[in-house]
Image (cartoon, rainbow, N blue to C red):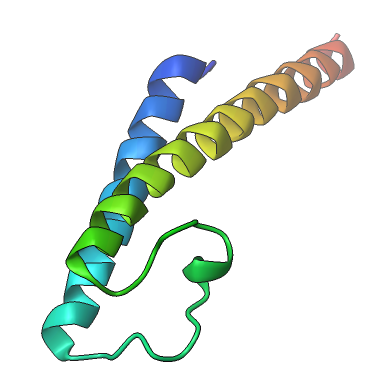
Length: 92
């Protein structure tokens, strides 16, 4: 089975972006202060536990998720073709 790289990348990007957005709002509602450095602040420029930071996290998460999803899909397709071809050759 081959994955559609574009569709997988888009879906992965949406899920990652929404996940960062929801997690940020979870922290805002829980009352976590953003005085200390957070892990995502090192990677996502402008991100913080604020309403504006949640929107920036959504955008950065979508971009990062789309790129990572595309790489994962391509890697899966490449490896499944090679492993499938080798398995097919062994059965003959």
